[in-house]
Image (cartoon, rainbow, N blue to C red; front, side, top):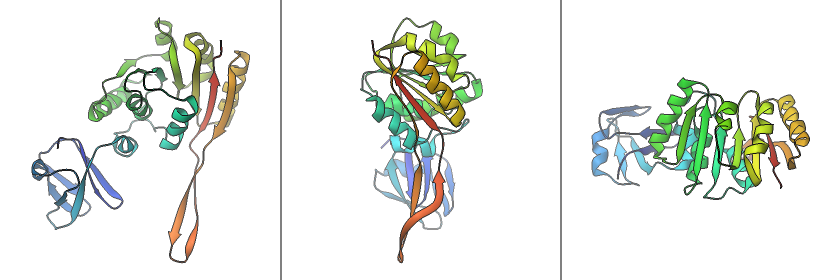
Length: 247
C-alpha cells in the first residue's frame, strides 16, 4: 500500500499523502507511520482508541479532498458533461478555467488514453490545481497559465471536447467552433442564468447543433425511522449549455 490513502470514519475522512508525522482528527491523534504496516480495509486507531478505516484514494475523492482555490464544479454537473458528450477514453480536451482542477482531473481520469489541456489565468489557482493533479497521479494533463482565447489561437490540433468555466465565455464560442472536430462538443458552465442564455444565443448564431441548456438540482433525503422526505436543502450550483459541431 502506497500513499495517498483516505482515512474514513462515518462522515469524517482525511486524505493522507505521506506515511510520516501525525494526523489530528476529531477523535484524537493518529501516528501515520503505523500505516506502513497496514493494507486497504485495515483499521488504524487514534491515541483515544477510535478506529479509522484505510481506503484507497479514488476519483470519487477528488471533489471531497482536493485543495481548493476557486469553487469547483460539482460531481453532478461533471457527470452530466461526461454522459451528455459521450466522452471516449482517447479524447483531446480543452478545459478553460482550471480553478482547483476538479473538472480537469475527472476528465483526465476517464480519458486515460487521451489528453487534457487546461488553461487558467490566475497563477495561484493553477498552482493549487497542479498539486492536486500530482496527488491524483494524473499524467495526461497539460497545464497552461494564461488567457484561454490567446492560448487557443496557438493550437494546431482540433479538440473532441471543449469545456468553459470562465468569464467572457460568449467570446470563446466562435473559437470553439473553429477548433472543434466535426461531431465535437462545447460545454459552458455558468452560475448565472442570463449568461447561460447569452451563450445559448451565440451557439445558435454560430450554427451549433443539438443545443441544450439546463440545470441539475441535487435534493438530499432525510431518512428517519418515522419516514423519508426531501431535505429543505436544494443544491443549485450553475447552468450547463451544450452545443455540437456538425460538419
